[in-house]
Image 1 (spheres, rainbow over the protein chains, first blue to last red):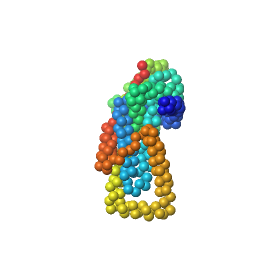
Image 2 (cartoon, one colour; image 1 turned 45 degrees about the vertical axis):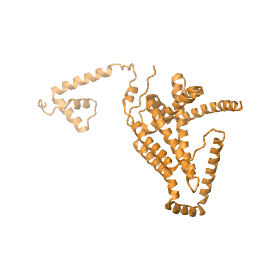
Image 3 (cartoon, chains in turn orange, green; image 1 turned 60 degrees about the vertical axis):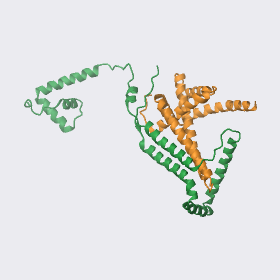
Image 4 (cartoon, rainbow over the protein chains, first blue to last red; image 1 turned 180 degrees about the vertical axis):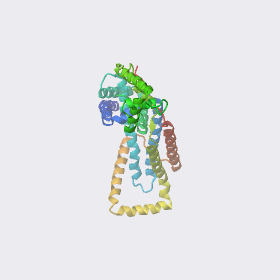
Length: 165
Length: 192
């Protein structure tokens, strides 16, 4: 019972926080979010594959560095600290990717609204859909996050022409 | 009068002459030629009338904005160099991490350990303390997360499997990113 209450509380507190973080991500990094949004909208399949590839690589890098740190005889802790770098890169990529997906969803849901409103509404919709038992937890939210991560990678490594304003 | 068929200005030169876009010597040459050549004078009059007619016509607005389609048709340019640099850096880090367990048990590892001990006893040793503190904090944080079964604890991975995991992930990453980030066009979906 206590666990359920704790989960509910963490969702109630975490959800608005995540919506705010995604909105701020869009405001603070508009170029990369816009590029990721465009890539995710134009090439969702490729974005998903890129998201999977980069998630696997970064996760493996974290595991390898941490495990190597634990195996090392000196146990200086350098490798554990180094393992933080790919973890932070992954977390940043996922956050920016989710911000891009929020903007994309908001643009499709309420095209007449301003960009900030679109991101807030898109993030709220994304989060609520992600809370749907099983389908949201294991399918919608992970796939959306991976498409966003792949969009970020495309946005970082490809220079596409800007669309007309 | 100029002789017919000799040194007539081309159509492009006549148009440029009308627009005052020729350089001074060419402008003078065409002007002198036109003064003495009836055919070129007629052609110049025709061009002048045509341009005047075009300019007098009202501007027509396009019913559809074509700029988006033009931009979509342009290929995206991939920044190959940063990708390669990142690939090399990641491969170097991965290899260093993978090679560390063997390095520590080899003779070279002993020499390196002695050098590190000497380095640690110097004034730069403060950096080691900082790293130790950070690592201890990280371990405590991870243990705290693992205790209530939020994160599974990392099992001890044998060195060959560690090598296989890191190498496979690095290979998958390099090949996957290389294939998926090849030169392509990012298309925007039209809103209905």
